[in-house]
Length: 191
Image 1 (cartoon, rainbow, N blue to C red):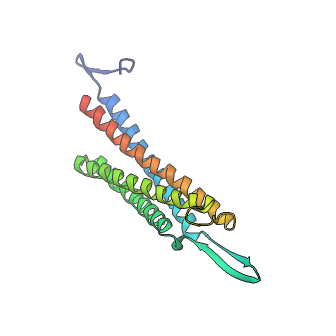
Image 2: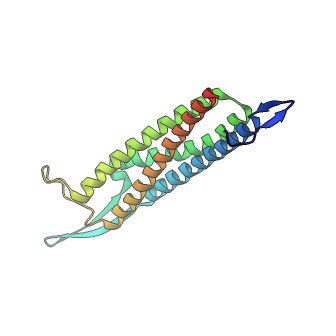
Image 3: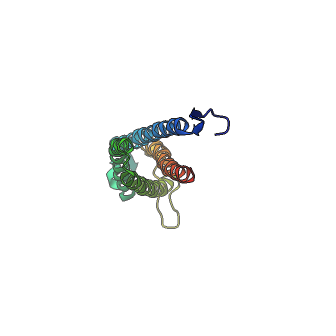
């Protein structure tokens, strides 16, 4: 703050303008992160929700029609539901946090920060579950005779991989929201 000009009223220096500008920048960053979290989790939810691939598999002289779909694996269901919750929460928290900041309701902002932390933990948990299932789909597990399936359902696996990457980025955005709130708390406490 040493390089920034301070306004002077009757010989008394004030940091009010500088603090207001930093607060506005901080509010814009918060809204942008929430919009980004919303878009990433929404896109991951849509990709998983509409992801489906059907193949005809031949075994000996028999042919089977097999479909890969998100609802067949509980870890992918958890992944889809968690991303839908994260998306809904991001949209709601965008409005609530804006109202809370303009009205100066610090209790609401604290609750939003705690909920950001919960959503971040849920998203990272769902990403871990979906990633574990994805590894099994890619490589299988020879110890328990689980065959790899991504060599058959390659398009479905690619879609799930894209959704997982988007969700990981979305989880990181919620992590940045929590970090941003902590930095604001530290900054305002020290001034």
